[in-house]
Amino acid sequence: MGSVIPLKKSANSAYLELKNLLGNKLQKVEDLIEQRLKSEVDLIEKMSDHHLKSGGKRLRALLTLESAKLTGYKEDNRDINLAACVELIHSATLLHDDVIDESSLRRGVKTTNSIWGNQSSILVGDYLLSRCFEIMVQDGDLEVLQLLSSTSAKIAQGEVLQLQHKGEADLLEETYIDIINLKTAALFSAATKTGACISGSNDKEKKALESYGRNLGLAFQIADDSLDYYAKEKFFGKQIGKDFYEGKVTLPLITIFQKGNEEEKEFLTEIMKKEKRTEEDFSETLALINKYKAVETSLKKAEYFVNVSYDALAIFPDSEDKRILQSLTSFSLNRSF
Image (cartoon, rainbow, N blue to C red; front, side, top):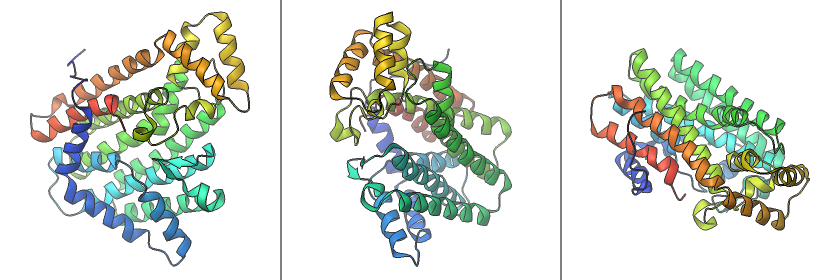
């Protein structure tokens, strides 16, 4: 395979460099979202404001903006408008996720559902999606409308597929990859391809940026699932072991099931079947994860997707924008937040 990425260099700095480079445009994205979410219903404004201002990297919006910049977009504000769309889709899915997962914290802040309840949170998530589609229709590009609307459907399918397989300790790795490809990587690839679409890129460039985004998203989600077993909560922004307690089977657990003996497989099967898992269950599982180096194995798989993502940009001439996007691949794997 192609390039070897310097994965252990300051990964977070790649993200911060991108954010600083696009700071002015990103602020315009934030302003547009705030403007579009105004409502005559006070509760909608209050809830959406709380959710959107509780932190977040705005990584998908940044990917849209930077992909457009890489491919030569220099016109009006379409990059800003569509970056806002991508971010609204992401924010809506998070609102729905928190209800499904019964989450009380996101990025270290109380979730909207824990404050205002599940029903309002679902409806406000729907409101965010409706505002997103308004912006897309006003943009008028059928290719982008098709891309982002189909992506919204893929995310929903991924969430349902994950629910369908909840608690299955013997979940196949292929099924896990299908889940994260739909629920995470699809929006990453849509973000980067959108940037190429609005700049009038050819099909080869669109496919390259789509591949870059998809593989970046796969690496990002595998790393996120691995962080669940070793990150520091104050940086990670959510409870450590959250996926485990919710019964989500991710790559570290799949690795245990692949490598463990029959007794260990039986243990994992039984605890994942339970309605609620205890701290003792988590400690015993963590011991197995350490025994079989499941986190390291998972991150090795993520590293593969990082390299594919990095190499997808090879068709573009060398530039500062290309370098930044390539550097960002290491952030997906080695971030601390």
